[in-house]
Length: 485
Ligand code: ADP
Ligand code: MG
Image 1 (spheres, rainbow, N blue to C red):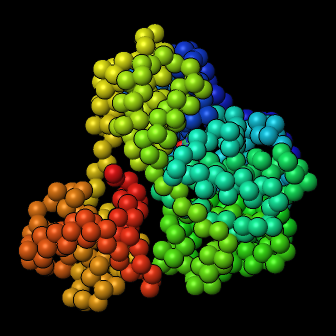
Image 2: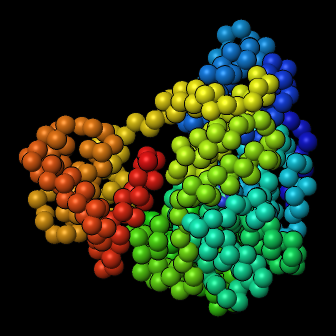
Image 3: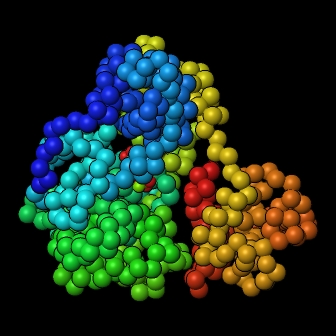
């Protein structure tokens, strides 16, 4: 392990003071609920930036805690102190990156190291074992358990397969590939595997890492000429869990490095589990060799939860947080938030706080009131360029291709979908959309829209990388990347 550094920097001391002042301002219960281990703090001069996990939370926090945060900042940084809330992508991804631990580090190690933000200076095993500690000096994350995962028709296969790999890692489904939209439980399942393997097979080395962190460590090792240490580190694990593998798209050298690690582990009969937002065949900019390795085990899709599962998730959360809410209000939440479990949790968090602050049972009217203002604030503004970027990334085509006159299906289909999605999510005028996509006539856009609608009605498929895909599923995947529903 990294030696402990118990000397807090002036910045950390200020952050600690701000946190305790905040706690005084809002009360311990509310502080624990909204700030503790859920926020990040940064100070530059007399500006305090508070990071939160999503735009959803951001709007709520800004509304509820702006005054208290300002007062807390002013009491520590002086009268001219200012406060800004931002979405901290680190918290959003709940990156497990710096949380990589090996079999030698226990959960209790996490709260010890007060050095929160520093990257390991040299690539060696001790730096990897260093857990991420939150900027306010406390550990940020605890690994979730299978027992906290509510199963339903959309995710039960994935849950079963995840549990199965824990029984005899490496023996059956390796690699296990879990894919599905944002907030559907991929990371949760990886954490569940991590926990269970460590509980039941403490002698096995388990590593949980995001593809992004793998990339960061690799580039760092390259820079510092410590590749052998890097390789050794990754190749001696028994169970490697890699979250968000789609991050490796377009990164050829990293893909190559990952492929070697992967092959090595496969040859040794070790277990690899990977998560992604898409089926391996839809990873357009991943090498064929890596793709076929990813396909060589069990590929499992996680679908958006149906009403019954959503209701069970709502019940589970409410039981865990024990707050008072009517049955109608519960149903209202389960009906309203359809696509994403993280959203359901965000909504229930708000209702929980509201109920604890007011001391009242949440009725359906109260739920409607609290959540509708939150939803209104959180509507994601989609621009034409967002759609263009998303479609290009997804299909592996360029913006120039979309605007060109090329009529081959590999270009015309992405173009048609881009037009359809722009119209659906931005309500831009047809002629403006036509102009944007290569100076086309408004009637071209109208017919693209009609075509997609009728294909959806017929449950048609389209070909991507010589494979047929349901158009509905492709659009769902694109919309999930755009974060719209
Ligand atoms: P993803 O990695 O697919 O984007 P996460 O695993 O981060 O999604 O899940 C988002 C949040 O929803 C997490 O807090 C997770 O615990 C919760 N969650 C997801 N699926 C379930 C489930 N089936 N039951 C209970 N909680 C869930
Ligand atoms: Mg995730």
